[in-house]
Image (cartoon, rainbow, N blue to C red):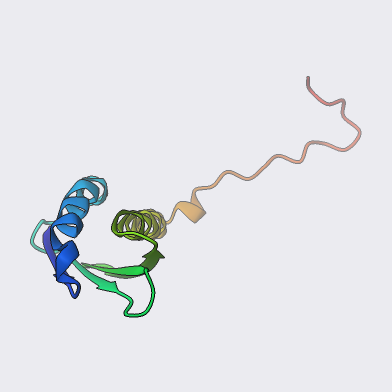
Length: 119
């Protein structure tokens, strides 16, 4: 997977890169089926000018679609962790739609009316 991260707040660059390197293996684990050169992850890290708040946004480009997520936090680590958690949940949902898991769900048996319930 190709990874690129832009930091518009230079003082936190090393912390951002370290946190991204810690979170990327979780995403790569879900992308085993894709060719490494086809999956691209782009992140942008910003600090709000008037608040002590950080924003981290991620774009994951796959051959089957593009996923986007954004997270805000009071420090570098929480914003990046929240963004990656949202990306992982979106990726799992995307892959389940590709597998058509909704077609394979078992129907719940309603039982026969008047028959005794099995304990």
